[in-house]
Length: 525
Image (cartoon, rainbow, N blue to C red; front, side, top):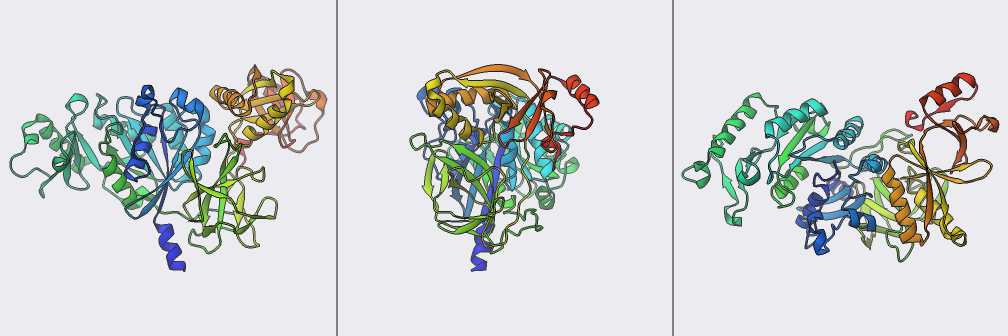
């Protein structure tokens, strides 16, 4: 039994795809699903006019804008592996959702646009991966267009991100002159836009094409051989250990839109990416092969099926085996629950899951039981996995329903959407008006669209501008300290929070009221 569980866990590969918007993240996700047989036809962002939308973008606002603003979860089988992909929001206003998603994976795939190189959002997400020690695989995309020189891109990787790289393959030309990739790892050339039987060209022991071949007539072939020689002599050595510990990133070149280089990338990724790893908890490291079932909630999503007004809590299984109908302990409350309704995902398509093991992501139907960061465990001894980061909102709006007759729907919508964690809810103390806080403006636009589409409520939002939010240690605070420059509110858990107009107002308040202890949740481990 244990051997069977170990084999199942070892076959899992769970990763998130991170990138700047427009680098090709959703397109690459689609093509991976295509190879996994999970979909028959990849609808890309480019095909919006035809009405084909990306399989992993299911929310209405995502289809309209061609961006991902939620983290989709998709599973498929490929070559003896069970692959779980978490497609993270590309837009920087949704960095919270992405950060939490990165706590639920064992590795990350970083996509870089060959024309743009490292962009701000990529840098932010990369830093989170490094901080958590997550192995990173790099896919440099859009080689079928003109972009930066490959050596320049590698230098940027090492200088800007501070990580060493090992190119698993190397482009032969780019843009209109893109002929294919020189596959260092498999000692072959993969040709671009040729018949399938001519796609791969074997190389000899010296890494060159034997005999006559049309590729040898191109100066780009000679240039590639020179660059490969340079990489062999002066580049970094390949090391699987350094890939696993996150200090070396294997680099792959390709074009997701034309599906070129994607299968080569997937095959190599599955060979070198880590299986589910042990995770820290209040009782020490938990082995994924443990007989005790455990996991944590890293995301809650309302209305994935608008027809049923449901809420799904996304659970990363960290150890043991899940079986539908099993009884578990919710560590935060000490109460037992029966996991009767569970699901697995293909964007908005879902199926009931009977069994799952460490590394898998499953959805639990939620009637308000779970909170982001909750740990669930089989047996009677509860423990808690590491806390998930709580983000400090920077932008605020005052929100109310346009139609007072819709108050019931308004309150229900706010409560459900707030529990997803992308926006935070605050109330003024005396008037009990609602304030929403978020990291970026787009979150408010998504909130407004979802209230209208999913709850049939039009809302009025009055901008309050940027504020500095600081929570208060303990609940004893003089409410008379509240002012327009340091507004005292309560969060959805009833904890008191000051919203300061700016840094000056924060410093002035601290100088005048040293007895009031303030803290930023981002600084609390």
